[in-house]
Length: 437
Image 1 (cartoon, rainbow, N blue to C red):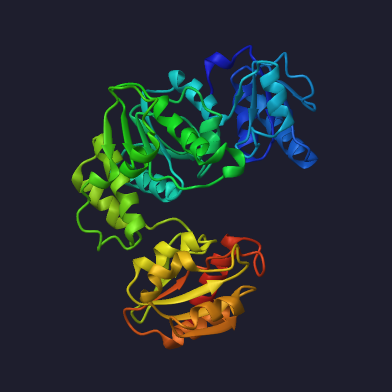
Image 2 (cartoon, rainbow, N blue to C red):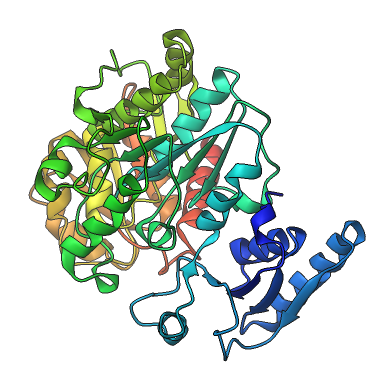
């Protein structure tokens, strides 16, 4: 795990003991810190206590208590998960009143960097595309033989992973919530892909949300690099608090060549993700040959425009993560002839955001609670059948598709009417597709 010498002898309060919280406590006690931790879920407290007992075999002294965090004045910092709303949570307010910093595991990672072998850090944020771009950068680096870890808002908690050898690159997906809890992360390359209104219940309007994202650049030092969406920078002055001499590269000006051969990076949104990833890779010294190899061999993330099969010239694409019309729209734009499986528990009453891609849909199949309503909406624009279930939709689409077509699960809805989550929905899609074989 990753630890910092600077933690030794300090006192930390840790709120929330899910995966990242548990890894945080383990790293802090391994680093010699005194920790008081709390989670209202007793099973999480018990599981962490057992893991610490196993860890203590290699430690001379473990200072860990499990208590409700009533008095924060004696602590050097309160460590919370990104899910804790800093604008409304009473413990966050109590920490501020006591003058105690409220931080997250990414700030602890930043504090530990001085004790790690020489390395670089890439931080990637944005409203959309963070996970794909983070995974793509990580994949290109691995393809080039560069030691790399992926963490932050994706993969395993960063503090729980083993440090990289010298020359390694940590690639971090960072939400605005994580950036809010970070003060000293100086990324060698910081990326902002785009920015649209989101999470406005946590911020003072869109400007507050944009300012949160912009802090990633404000923490950088020269000669590190900012890779940023030109339109977002022009509209929101995202580099306004960054060092004046900070080098900047605009995503839309990064040349990527022909996108056609990258099966998991289709569509205009993935062109932007690829531009950003290529800009990062070049800044880190990766060769054009290795960049090309990485783009071609990237298989995508599960349930995000992931091609899972191809039978008789028909591609089957799982985009179950598209849980609203705005996130489904890019998938419709990515393929020429689409058999669209759409529906579930709707987050709105229309599919207007998807309308620019309607011309690519040769047939739609609606499912779930929203199925009847969506069938009415789509009937004037394309052939549509309300089939009800995902399995029935796959069978109907397979019967209608011809070579060169794409059968696309991009539901534009939440999954909870028929599935536990979008991952379960994606797994059911895969199972239905595999049954065709």
